[in-house]
Image 1: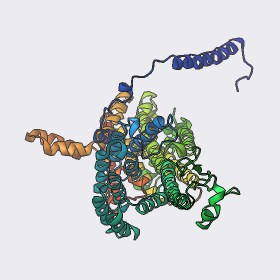
Image 2: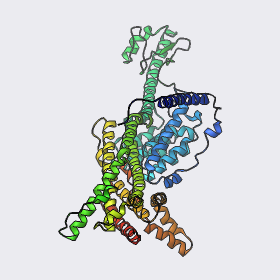
Image 3: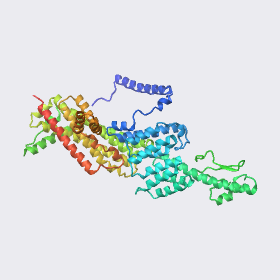
Length: 303
Length: 277
């Protein structure tokens, strides 16, 4: 057994290793701080290899490569979203996410049965490149014809596009799958009859919230549901304000005045009669325009 | 002198049983040698990798931890196994020749084929221990990230078995090359076989799309003669909870057994031609 006593030379070497490592850390930090800003054209350079090429080169590790592309997609979007914290996941068109479609395309080419990227493509891509969103989701349906959820995603994309007839058709095709839930058929009818209505939107986001495993998608669906609930509440409050104005020829000076009516409509109020939005923030009464507005601090996205 | 040179041979009751005993003794010693060479230390890296993945993937994967743990765990299992197969496999025979311990072995009543098969089985046993421990690690990581029982912890095992079979083929290939070539070249050639083995679908399409008949024959021959390792690639479906169809798994294993028998026979032929005097 070797002795535990350290000789002078060994102590000097240990000291050199420790000092050297600290110097490396400090030097790295210096280099990072003084690194020139990356040219956006270089940062957004197209992927060198498409999904099919990577699939060939992956030597049986294509599942792992798909995971890598999937996580890169999340990091890519996350990196852009981090500077605009309150932006909704389905409204990222202004962020110039031109690499997102190729990244999701590669992930789904490497592992065509990986369903999560299709959902992400259906939710995030339409605001960036709706044709790519349709192409990737259609590719997913070809690879997974028995997955009714992909029809739901494609229907959602067409709904966002305002093409309610095709959206209804997609929900109908998905409903033909024996494993599809009954609401897919109901959705087909609803989409054809009242595609642009608030109740259709509520149904879409409720189903999305039920099925999504990605916390960001859940958060987005929840925000939309709160927004829809808030829109309903604001419609009610606006009606009460208009009725009051019609009767009294003036706008109520505060919430207390119309509190009994609001209470009868089952809105949640505090002691002063101020109604709360579904996220728990008090609505603002604009007496000059006799209207109700969301509190700027509220988590509910403005319409 | 390595342990393989210290093989003791019991008095055989029949030729068949004594051959088995000799092969088992050589295999046991090859396994011990691998353990002493700290080959199984890779398990520590594997466990660290899986632990880190289980802890950090939740934040990075958008709710896809289970799939990524299976992909990562089984891919690492294949990759570590390939490195062990190649780098240990090419040294098994060469080390005995280099240290001249092979003379001591062959001075005993041990056939060259028995020696090769024994060495091969010893490394396969090492790989089996490696693969089983790694498979258990992946299953435990799945149970951890699912916060309870996860059916994937069981459904990955057919894919684990196919990975092991692929490693058995690769070990045979490494031993075949090491029977006539240097370790560096053998490692390189075996790695090429691993790569080409996963390109077999492209070889087949090349064979059918070539304009000239000789080119078609050439690529067709390559497709059929080189091991088709894509038969054993079931990691990606396993991550979705899909098991290989039983018929496919059985035919793949039969293919592997046949291929390994051919490789070991060829390696024995080469070793028999070598002059150790």
